[in-house]
Image (cartoon, rainbow, N blue to C red):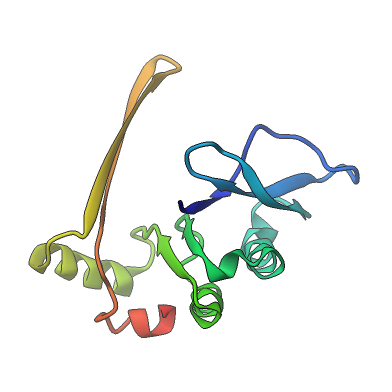
Amino acid sequence: MGKLFGELPVAKTSKGKEPWNAVTHKSKTILAQSPLPSRKAAEVTQTQILLRHSGLEKTKVTLDALHPLPRTTEQIHQAGGSYIIQAKGNQSILQRQLQQVRATHQPLDSYKQIDKGHGRLEVRQGRCFDVRELEYASTLV
């Protein structure tokens, strides 16, 4: 189904660098991999490179909140792919627009994940909305 960019248990490449992985959601099967030169500094660039070189930009991908960037989303859109990207509150214009959508539209889908471990209970919830009508979306799509 969808693709997930993220981390698996840390391993090193033959050059001693941590790999950046594209994995399937359910099985965590690695679909593509690229060495990550440094932790967060290169994550956006490496994701764009990995999308292009693997052909995953032509598919449906999910990305975390680091990636609602015009260059990344335009790359996926131009290749004919689609994406779901988490949004966080550090982008105030986008956040205000998303709050308006949440207040006036029904979600397309929702999920709830409950994890027990490490002495705590984690509950993650999300809702998916079509945001093509947003002004900000013109910089994303």
